[in-house]
Image (tube, rainbow, N blue to C red):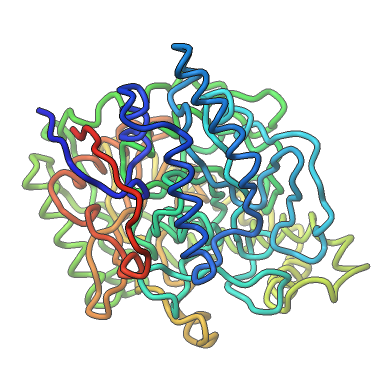
Length: 483
């Protein structure tokens, strides 16, 4: 069934845009012009971009338009604008990692994921804000200001993929890439009320991505819909023999089961994460129970599941991340300590105090945790649990940010490497997004997306838009076909 709707171009999903391009109802240049106008109006309030590469993006959009006129479609993202977190290399642009240390770090080659995006036809918009080296936190002592939350710019948008989350949420671009070492794709997805997927470890190449912790790092999509997440994952997934962590997986066609339903699935609810290990705010807890009821109403079998404690997962992640990050940054910490922001420097220096025994012990416990999660997946197909345990705090309240930022249930799936997705599950009384998380077996990212799609269809949270949208005059409109 097809409805013809009048919709602001900036709220088009990637899937909607490509259908509109193919039907000649919209051109890539028209879409990019609308987004650039919106970026000009809104980004001074949000600071999503470190560097907007408008001229190169417009050149790519014109090329995509000419190819469409000639009947040639380069790939599934032909003409679709994508924002890139500024730890990911784009040829000709600096990869600064939001740090004074790398301001002059001009790259000569695209990261593998960016090369794959270009092959799929995507238009690269520019580089997006991050926490310094994907680690520090929202800070004001860096070369660029921190990104802000479109639901309330006084609050942070999550991190470390902060510009990716803020920009997708605010309609500056439909797709973005982020990275996730302790939750840094899923945190902005949770704080901004969008969809963030951490794929299975090794499914997406990290070559050309500045590392934070080699055995925990992932690259993943941030989008406004589950279908767009599958579309973007299709474009970037694949084995890369130059990435030592890359897996020779045959997983493909991640959106193949999105409309299949979940009546044949067993879902394990990890309640103890938010009820006992690290008690969630009442609003988050209520939203999680509601999410469980939605899955049950869609036909899934729901049962409680017990995993190792959330606090132990966090401790293992902290040791591994701290030790690996310090090993990367030790030379600069010795020679240029003053060029780091205060928060980043403090967090990196903590890694110097972990011993080899600490690191080996954490990796041994990690193996046991992986076995425990794999054992749980013998009884269930997917897990449901918390993502953030509280809504995003204010940017000007570092004490509250320091308290709430670690209150999350994302790190378990960095420790284990299983695919995990966070998405909106409600709004707090203060009007800030609440979230839910789904996780699955290795390389069954399509099943995680299937459950998320069922939840998305059964609720209306993905249709909500941040009030900051009211600040922009909707001057670009089009008639488009929507499923």
